[in-house]
Image (tube, rainbow, N blue to C red):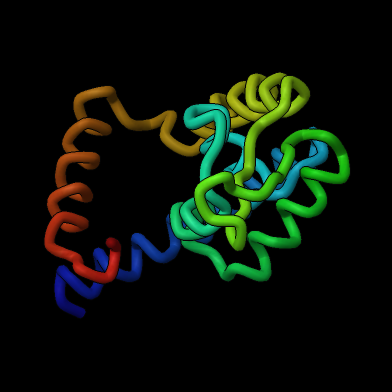
Length: 142
């Protein structure tokens, strides 16, 4: 197996482990991976066009829609029609959603420690730089 094939396969294994760890740990506070990502993104942006948010999630729109529907019904986010385009919706995070982001961040801190505990800070920075270099040349990532 070539080095690049090995790297490709290893990234797949890591992605799968990351997803499973996130699902398991986030379930303990009542969220799935998609819901936590939505809240985390909105925690930084405060509000976004729903189409833009779906694009940022890099998941199927129907999956994003289900997650948004649940978050909205439980008061974590609010959706309203865009003032600029009446056909479009804007999603905004509520105060309850912001509180949830703080919980999600704590859970993510634990996942990160568990997942990357054997790496030094400089090793993590080197891995980030290499992965960013790979993404910079990948048109499908945009």
